[in-house]
Length: 147
Ligand code: HEM
Image (cartoon, rainbow, N blue to C red; front, side):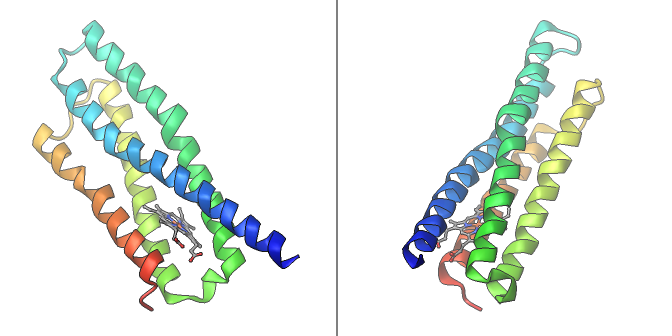
């Protein structure tokens, strides 16, 4: 029985990390797409192609990865009793912030698709630091469990 539980935990963790990678990749790509999208002429075929690429990235990569990371992450937390541990509370705050950033990016893309102009390319490039910073802090928390 112990061995089954241990194997389940390891498979959950492997799945969790695989989908974290997909989610992060999508979060890094989407603002890049927005930069190219904003540089295309309004109403041009190129703009239409960017709108289409953004929608596909959301549908195929970002939304499914977000859901799977959360489901497997919560299952892991339940398995290891994470809800009683300080590092996990901090990780939850960071992951909630990252999920809110994800939601904001999606809303921004819908605005762009309606033809509303948004942030400058420079601002979007700066925003791309957000998931990198959050991921670094989260990985340190889960590996070192400092509290
Ligand atoms: C979305 C909500 C998330 C929840 C609820 C969650 C929860 C968890 C839990 C409970 C563990 C097991 C820790 C252990 O066994 O010691 C874990 C492992 C891990 N998580 Fe998450 N996580 C989430 C998102 C993320 C994100 C966004 C990242 C990275 C950017 C991440 C990176 C990792 C890594 C690298 C491990 C493996 C640590 C080890 O080797 O033990 N997680 N996660």
